[in-house]
Amino acid sequence: MSSCDLSAFEQGKVLTSIRKQKTISQSVSLSGIGLFTGLEVKMRFYPAPIDTGIIFSRVDLPGSPQLKASIENIWGTPRCTILGKKMIHAQTVEHVLSALRAYDIDNLLIEIDGPEVPVGDGSALPFVSIIEQAGVVEQDGDRNCRFLASPVYWSEGDVHLVALPSKELRISYTLSYPDNQLIRSQFFSCVIDSKSYKEQIAACRTFSLYEEIVPLLENGIIKGGSLDNGVVIKGKEVLNPGGFRFDNEPVRHKVLDLIGDLSLIGFPIIAHIIAIRSGHYSNTQFAKVLTQHVQAEASVEESVVPPIAACFQST
Image (cartoon, rainbow, N blue to C red; front, side, top):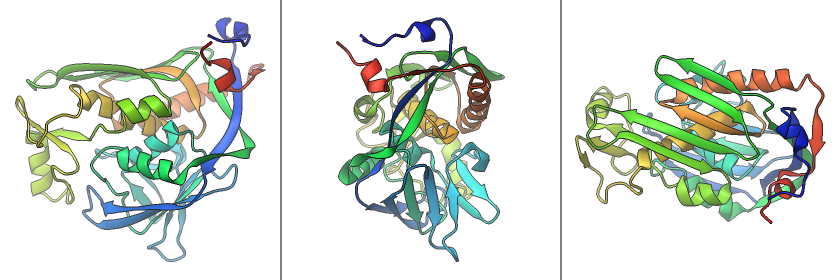
C-alpha cells in the first residue's frame, strides 16, 4: 500500500505530512436563496494567496467586512453553523465548507451579498459543480496535514464523537431516529477524498421530520425552505418527488455536515472520525477539542514524512 516508512505512526508518534496549498484557478459564482432567511443571495469565489484560509466577505455591508472560517468565529449552531464577530455574520456555511474541504482548497475569498450562503438543493452538489468549473490549482506554499498520535473524544448525553489515529481520513457515522419508521438507525462509513465525496456524499440533502419542520415554517424560523431544497419525512413516507437519492441519504448528509464543521479547525487532520447522533453543536465542540488535542501533541517531537498522496497511494 505504501512505500513510506510509517513506523513512527505505528509506534504512536505524531506525524506531519506536507502537501502544497491549493486554491481555485478562476473566479466563479452561484446564486440562490438562503434556507433560513429566504433572501436572494449571490456568492462568488475568488482565488486567494497562500496562507489566506477561507474568507467570507459580506459585500452588502459597508466596507465589505471579512470573516475567516475558523473555530474562533463560530457564532452559533441553530440547525446550521453560523460564523460571526461583532456586526458581521455568515449563516449556513457548513455545506460550502464541506465541499471545499473535500477538494483540499485551503485559500479562497467568498463574497456574499447577504447574511446567508445559498442553500441550492440542500446538498453540496452546487458547490462541487462550481469548484470543478473553476478548477483547483496547487500553490507555492506548503500545508501541514496532521495525523493523530492518540485518540480523542467528546460526549454529551447520547451524542458521541471520537477521532482515532489512522493513515487516511475516514468518517463513520451512526444516525438514530428510533421513533421514525423510515429512518430508525442508519450507518455510513467512507474514506474521504474528492472522488468519494462527489460520488457518495455531495448529492445528499438536508432533511427533517414533518413534525419538526412544520412549526419552524409556520413561525418563520425557516423562510426559504421547500421540497426543492430539503428532504421532508412523514412517517414511512418521503414527501419529495423521487424520494431519497440514496437509501441512507440522511446519514450521508450528516457526514457531509460533519466534514464542513470540522473544516473550521483550519488545517487538515487525518484520522478515523466516529460520530454517533452528532449535529452542528456537537461537531463544532468536537472541532475545538480536536484542535486542542492536536496542538498538545504538536509539542512533542514530530516526524516529517513525504506528501500524503505519495505515502498512501495504492501499489
